[in-house]
Image (cartoon, rainbow over all chains, first blue to last red; front, top):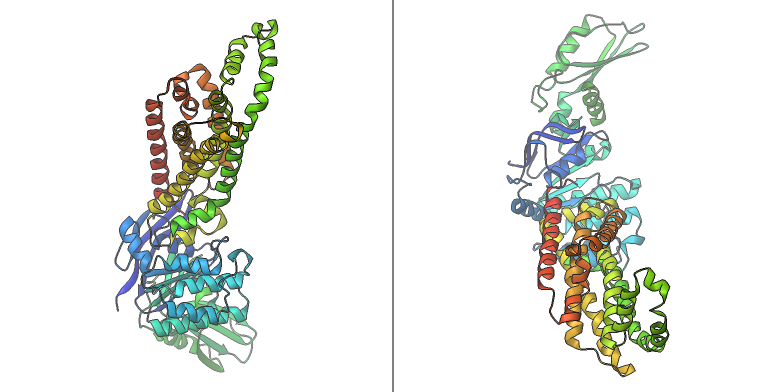
Length: 311
Length: 257
């Protein structure tokens, strides 16, 4: 599977703010790639660099193997990419029909069948002026404009931000259905971990402009595990020495240990998986707990741990 | 479609500018009748001691002299004053805005994600604005040609086109200046006010250094007085306008959004 997006050592400095600090990223073709990070972690800057809207201070960025900063290859990239920005700001003075006609004129592979389908599905009236639309409806218009381009890569910056849960679910389902039908790649940034977990098959977590975790979501989950130990009395105040221990919490009789790849190790997920948990469990058996449970973790646990690790 | 977008963004400025400048040019035709009635009174007072003492006598006498004929009146009132002075303001207004000001409204990212180069985006916007300015510069003097017979006068279509060309080329410099400033400042107000400030400074400087008199090019004074277009001034203005537009396109190309 080739990569549609590749960055290596990507830096972007805005005056005195280092928005990206050596970002390494690989997005496989055909994946639904969740791009996670806290506010200000560098998600939007990364997308802007990939689309040629901002030039990197140094490092490499390629989309479909081409540089977004060359005028002609930048145009070629943008012809193959559909982008929906965080704000979903469109041209206020146009009607829905006008902005569809405007956008259609730039994309030879525009899908008229999908246009009609999404107009019905999203209940969009072509005669309505964009200025008068709610944020949710604007998002639907922006999504229609992105999905009908016949794009090979959908690049979505916080696609559900500002939407109510029902509308967010509607948007996510439309995306999943579209990708299933059209076999395109989706690269979307979000800090809504539940929705990333719901639709993504690959994720990258960035913090302070660097990739801290990246890889297939299933493998990532297998890398991290939660070990819960219950003791007869209060849980002992212990130090875990085995590699792969990330966090230890005591509460009454319960001691919880989060395990994962050793800190400072490679950010790319590997198949070492549960060996970290096994080593920690072996060490903790010596404290004679009454029970030991090893359970999978959520993306939220991984995210919080990854972000915290870097602090 | 980029041209259509640029048209939708600027159409109200264009329509307002076209209406105001055409109405001003057209109404000056009817002002000629009233001025003719006033001329004997003005003639009687222009040589007063007070006026002579202030050194304005010659200028006033010339103004009165010029306005005795319809052609002179049209040039003095409609072209030299209304079209040139108000024209500068509207040329600047048409040049303001563009991709950077879109970024303050939030739609710039949508535009930048389209498969077109920034130069093409800028070109469509500048081309639309210049086409609008050309239409204004031509329609306003041509309205005089159309209305003059209604008061029994005549204004040559060749004169109207010649003055329209001068107004267009001179005004294009201010249009381009505003376009360039709009690639430096995201709002509309700063490019507008700075460009107007520069226009005022040029007007003041041209009293001391007549070679800076872009307004003389714009009002086609040499054509009115001697029947020859100010070719050098037109050429310098056109080159200056192109240089400003080129600088604007280059600035936009290098800019981060």
